[in-house]
Length: 368
Figure (cartoon, rainbow, N blue to C red):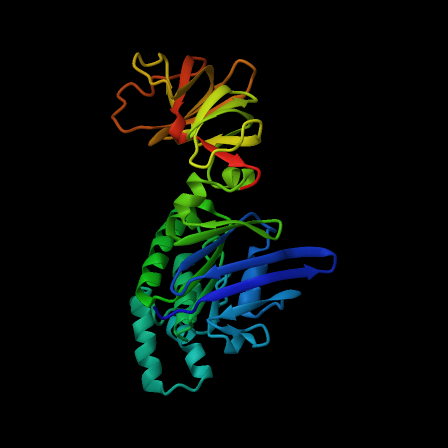
């Protein structure tokens, strides 16, 4: 690996009376693709700017490998940044934009040409070398910005919502390319985004932030399947969440008395105590919806009756909003794995059963 370890140690940042970061500690491993994920104003860009040297922390330290870089200016940190707005020079060609950092360092011309050629190939812009930024698409401009940031051979690349100005299809395409570039260059990528799908699809690990704090750090599937609290559960994808009380524990099988779903069974390898107040959550794709309850159904399968309040057909799947007797809405996602010659069989106002395995729900304990 060519990158650096990054360690954020109890970093806080205040702007007057506003606290943007509140005692944040993180360790980002050498060569990781690490994402800072959270809503606008959560502190993720402020943290990125502190790592890059564009802001100083009010408290705390930032280490690249074992060196505290807080006193070191941005141009001496071996860290480069890719910004949302590209920050290209409009009067320079693609090649000259990419070469600019090398020219600042008075790199010999032969080396400049060789390295610019290498990075044009890396971002697949060889055929656009002599164009100006105004002649490029948004995705091409961002690839130029990435090449310019990488040509200095930094040990850490900071990416501040680099795809947010692009349309959804182009964003997904460039995200795949960005992941491939990371695999080739092998340095540490720290990626800021508010888009959950972006973070989950490319990251080795994700830090979910809110109100200036890190709420959870983990691999994408850990963040999604085992959220640390109600905010993470609701922010990462869609879910069904209800307040609950633990009424029985039998090994790993927990019985909950929930606010809207009645008695619910859920497995937990570290079960809470009887009487504890918890949050129960189950993802919409874990639920099944049918007009008739299957004849063979296990004792650990949860089931509730409801009425289709809103069916939404999306081609590859349908989303069903199921209204329960007291008005609570449960979301169910049904994947279309087979050809539907007459359309979805479940329609508006149909009476249905919603059911799911005890293994597919999750308990968010207040102490976790």
